[in-house]
Length: 408
Image 1: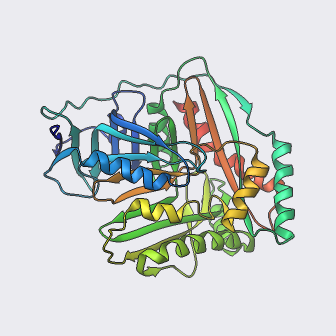
Image 2: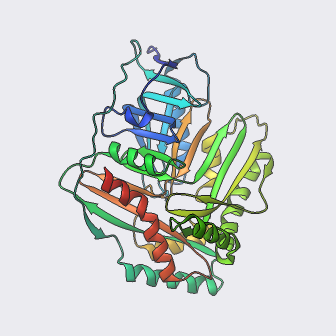
């Protein structure tokens, strides 16, 4: 019988901020407001696809866990071996699973390090990545602006005819440069500008998502639902008035209600009780404001422990990134978008050995491939939507990544 592979977690003293620590240009990251997890090096990696991808992901992860001899002196959420995941939007495309060799975590001023393999604690080095001021050439994505607006108009007609209630249509932009794109300085630029979002990176997909799809910790589940958006002006007084108008907007409230009901109904089978607030709050980000609702639940006791994978299978895709009814909306997306979403709008984050974890929806993001990055933005279309206004909303949603590229 082969010997088990040691995995060690221990407390870590003072160190630079998490996003300063990457020693290579392909990190994994899940950081918000300075807390979270970062990792590097690859112990194991695979891809899954198809209708059983969440179950296959669990099987692959558990097969590796059986090979580990875990020593954990911290015993906290996110300690021990960690699986970073980035699932595709569609089950017809590849999802990526990565087990890093080294993970550093931080929460509420306390930090720890986990490493896989023999030997003592590995050294902690500050990243050597510096902003390189790359010059980018921008190109239309799959559809030009007029083409995309025509598809939005088609979607509105389908909704008004009663075929669907809501659909989320996305578009893409591509940027190319002469040098290989380094994710590290982009991640730091995103964190500086959008500290209240989750800064993520898995296998070249990087971004700053405001939407927490699923947090599972000690039997409690939380999902932050965002739907309904308005741009900020930078003038506090005007933005307060805009926030009030967003909170009263029948179009945005309708879009938000579909998303909240989708999540609440998906969580219900797993929970003894759930809490769904009667009305959303307005989440203020640097460039936009969203209607937001935090749905929470207490997991039921089960002979087969409920884990992140089981909930993801029911939760994705929610109405926030697909539409209502889900199956019909997904068909409309396939017909109208004309593009591969890849891992955009899929679950992204981490899972620990106990089956707990945090995963967001991969929004405000881009996929790096050598000298190119492909950006994505989507808008929820309902009966009161307007193609021109939806296009302008998508332009605003591109801004976090475009700004980070300019500063990196």
